[in-house]
Length: 354
Image (tube, rainbow, N blue to C red; front, side, top):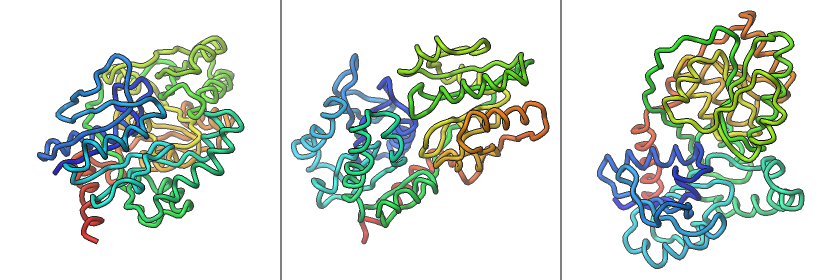
């Protein structure tokens, strides 16, 4: 089967995140099952228009916004005649495949809706337009679409927008061997994620300031990069170390050495960092928001009301042992990638048979 997946970025993009991990991991499994897979995404400086990643074909065209226009052109001029399945991977702005893909099954992947994220990431007039006009209008196009999403929270949010055929397909995991490292001797908290407004790394640092009152020798490791980094580095208190983006080996080692992961996003589709942390034995404390509440519950973490004060208080109780947490691998809540890939194809085939 020839599969074409639309996604605004690929893993080579400097702003790639969990959505790109999900799609490309699934695509790799489809290739392993003898399907031909192409991912169409935006251009990336320093990378060719036509590329390959672990057997997956990559086509990079268009800018951050222009990729959507170019995606339709690519369909009409190149892909329509040879594609058996289209995957519409939605990250805030959809590709609007219901408007131009006809006669070919379409599976839509929604990781999360934006809602309040508009106000964190865009100026006020744009935020109002996006939250109350654009996003509802875009999602209206998908009311009858065959949709997969990655958490019960995201399913509920999509159904509130009127989408009627939504199935939860869990996130996938690769086998991670816990690094042979010891926990740090002093209390160590780790933040993992992009340093952008919607992830609220400033809340993580504010919570750490409060935590240091109770644990003066505590340290915070900030793993990730983004537009807020320079400001955060200037304003961070003693005990905070910024690692930037790290490779998978170092990421897993840092997670394993820490005592607690903290997660402060406005909302998530799931919260992949919580899953990765649990896999190496480190529990998480995070905000009780869509997506994070799902991953925290699945992996033995604690969800608290969104405030640095509440976060610091709960982390302090974990560190003292008064309210300990045990990280669980989350069997059933997360699956091997080959099972995720199989479930997605089953949903697509069921939709095509209707």
